[in-house]
View 1 (tube, rainbow, N blue to C red):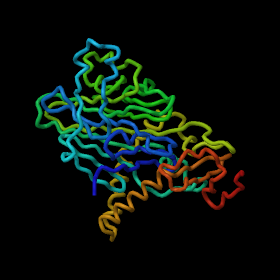
View 2 (cartoon, one colour):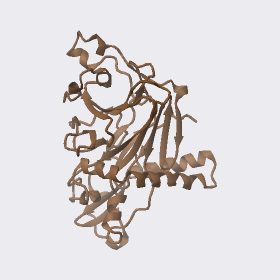
View 3 (tube, rainbow, N blue to C red):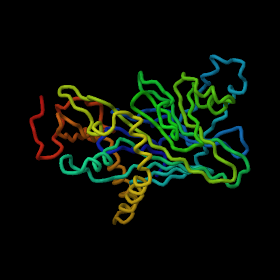
Length: 356
């Protein structure tokens, strides 16, 4: 079985997913999409010798670099410094709560725990806030203990979400750095070694000698550039927020239940980092649930994939103060249904007529 297949990493009831696994630009950050986002996702690190970069193969190499249209004389940026790790060098550990990729000195883990859906009206607000927070978490680890020079790692993507522009998040607390797209996607870290950048392509960002130019403000690619100290193994933590504010339906006005607790994509990311340790621990414990099951390898894979797909199809909506639980026909990640006409009540005691 190939390791290069897309898997969904979805918050509970948020109708959103970080999708990753297939080679090329076939994954990405999707909010209410009927397909994967089909974006280039960049996760990689500078080679030990410096001056070149290797990344997990979740992007399609460009035919040209965006800055070449504006800086024809910039020979340094015109060279392609980014390449994919060789396929045989990439390993994957695909679990229920943790999906880990390894290549060379780099490891990248995504934490998307599976948990019960607490019932509004019964569970405390703090429990509901935690369970329905629309984010997933990730860690990028670079083992630089055998290298005597600083290296540059990175995590970012090329957004393709319609009119929402890529941006550097400039309204975060001082200890955070982040990038995002519109009001729907944010990738935030609490590492002091991170530098946010935006440009026409990742190659430009990696080869940019002037830090001020990383805040160019134009271009469809944004990334967190991560300085890895020499002779150290460094772990970078990320909260990935997938968010839609306000009313999100037609036919009957409803918002996501999480909108009661989070008003901005930045607030979601901050909360994810504040609760990182507990969420990571929960994700690791989910893997143990599957490990102890009396299933063969293929059955475990099918079960994990089915649960992840179900999570990506779920919505918990707030309709006039009452909860509505929507499962969008098992599609990935559920289609773009914005009407309550096909929704079902979330819990029996809240049953009410659904508008036609």
